[in-house]
Image (cartoon, rainbow over all chains, first blue to last red; front, side):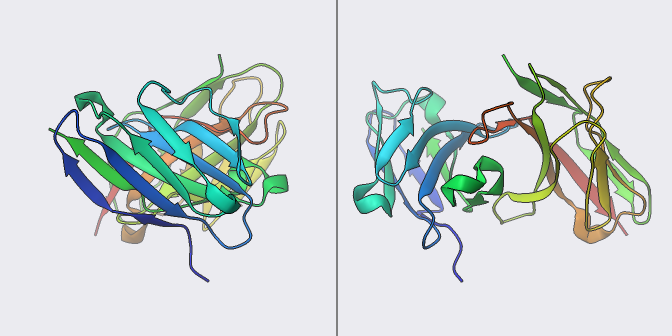
Length: 115
Length: 113
């Protein structure tokens, strides 16, 4: 069974440009998470979806970040415009909702470099 | 707020050496505690967990005991292998917040033959 798939794996953009990341969770997983991992730090939650509803987006910088999860499956995280401080690894994870965040499966992440 | 502190790396060991990676936490109530591992080029994986005080989580030769009195969850392995080289993250899930994880900064382990 395929795991959580993210694309692209790497992205280099100039500041002020837009960028989007895509995540395909494990089939049947209704809970989807986006995390940001800064260099030398642990992941921090940006947003959590239950099906297509964003139930925890308190850590998402809403002035420039947006996310969507159409039809409760794939999800896209967008940054517009990107800033130098957005350079990080963006991780997607998914789980069966009743199991909790600790049972989530993580993708390999997208490494974003803003120059 | 809740937080996790773990020892800085990198930790460099020879094969078959004993491993300890320290982790302490700050939280209200009784959080659940976890260790995650990230092998090169792979996603984060849950390594072990403990959900209440004095519980011992174990997997793949790794162990960690939930110590409420010292608010610690140190990771140990008696004999490391080259294949254990990875980044290890300690994390907690707040009491009543099973859908939330708070991670430490991670500790890189390098094991040499």
